[in-house]
Length: 519
Ligand SMILES: *[C@@H]1O[C@H](CO)[C@@H](O)[C@H](O)[C@H]1NC(C)=O
Ligand SMILES: *[C@@H]1O[C@H](CO)[C@@H](O)[C@H](O)[C@H]1NC(C)=O
Ligand SMILES: *[C@@H]1O[C@H](CO)[C@@H](O)[C@H](O)[C@H]1NC(C)=O
Ligand SMILES: *[C@@H]1O[C@H](CO)[C@@H](O)[C@H](O)[C@H]1NC(C)=O
Ligand SMILES: *[C@@H]1O[C@H](CO)[C@@H](O)[C@H](O)[C@H]1NC(C)=O
Ligand SMILES: *[C@@H]1O[C@H](CO)[C@@H](O)[C@H](O)[C@H]1NC(C)=O
Image 1 (cartoon, protein in one colour):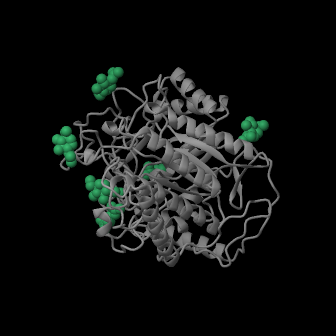
Image 2 (image 1 turned 60 degrees about the horizontal axis):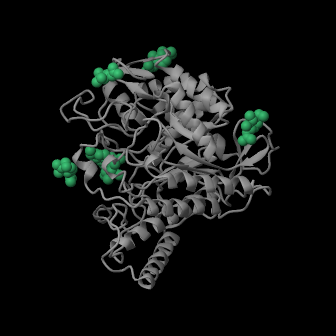
Image 3 (image 1 turned 90 degrees about the vertical axis):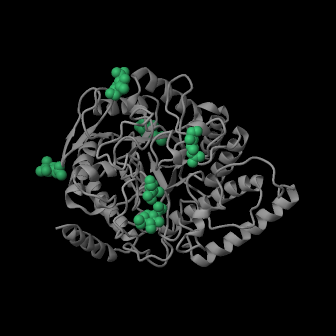
């Protein structure tokens, strides 16, 4: 038997929910736990917006290194740090941090000093700095291992826990539970039960801690990862799993919000399990109004063509249509885009990632939405044949990011929940040698240096400033850079570490000051 029990429970939940008409203003809570009201986060009775960062590796550091790193984040004005609350291995390692062994269909949790006590320590030290931790419970991504190997390859040049994808996650559960396809993680009852067991353990451990911002069900869930998709995975498969997990987490811990962790993929024309009720929910009067209209294919295409016209006009004015300037990988001219099933809207809007963020965000137990922005790894727009030169390509990357942020803010408005960007990044020239895509394993992978020029530090600052300002202006509730780099501590660099560009901290600091002044 696979999922019929879950299906039945879920259909019940949908039916029960369909009868509930969304009501306005509940009494504003003064709880120190993060809650939401309409499209706003509320903490201690006040709206809460923030600048944040990512540091999945924090539990692998020594105590003094963790303190130094968190203190610097706090001094920069950062309020929330996102990290992994999972660290799965397929056998007990000879050294280093791990939280769970998943081996041959069995799991066991490491409560020891190199186990969950490391996570306890990070949370304790974060509290001392007045920082929230946003904890992610598993990962879509996993190192590419040799096709013939059943275990993690030994050939990797980077140590375990260096790359964000090297902390276990979905594909490790799938493999160790004897399944074959990445999406078996969403449908095999034994695997769902194993992951629910892990989440119960972690979530109950910190259920009474207001310093936990929220529980993120998974980082970037989708139908694919290193293990192939079964071919039967659809957006509804992924949505249904989120509904199951969100209600499970809420049943263990009603204190915290549950967030999806999706990277923002949408499907404008897919069947919804949790359709938006009409008319769109209105934000409460205390909340600044934002666009609450649902994005349509027609509007997307219209916006796109207007953006293209503006880009071209600007490039002509600036004289940058020539073939000069800085080359970067992030671009919206892409051969991949030509293979899309629905080329006009692009893979982020046609459901081909297997994710429908609108449907997931509208699950009653999902407290807020999320998205990411990594132009070095994903296309956020359809093919643009008018973009000819490389400097034009940088402007396009920035502008495409702006459009993406606008679309995501609009999605949050349409669903009537807060939305955050859980990670954004552009690879610089200085970081390019370290760049490893999330769907890859080591810096020596042939796929990871397909192109490795990177932008200049100034371009990175400029892109980040534009994106952060756009997010703030559009009411995005949390804006989290990927990823922190602590210069006097050895912290991993997968191509996005900020340690090689001080300008990034200045961008974050300025934005944080702006938000603080606004509050
Ligand atoms: C909320 O109040 C608690 C307890 O007074 C405090 O520790 C916390 O920093 C406050 N949070 C914010 C965002 O102001
Ligand atoms: C930890 O284990 C790895 C793999 O077994 C080994 O390569 C590394 O040298 C060990 N590190 C320490 C500090 O013992
Ligand atoms: C989950 O936990 C329950 C209760 O402790 C246990 O019976 C079950 O075997 C576990 N499931 C898996 C897949 O480990
Ligand atoms: C990850 O890479 C593999 C090839 O190694 C590919 O088949 C798969 O589609 C990729 N997954 C994602 C989510 O990009
Ligand atoms: C995911 O896998 C499916 C089927 O294997 C494929 O059609 C699709 O293009 C893949 N998507 C991505 C983003 O790699
Ligand atoms: C990546 O770099 C290695 C070492 O320089 C080289 O052998 C390989 O061909 C490169 N791969 C690509 C796709 O450029």
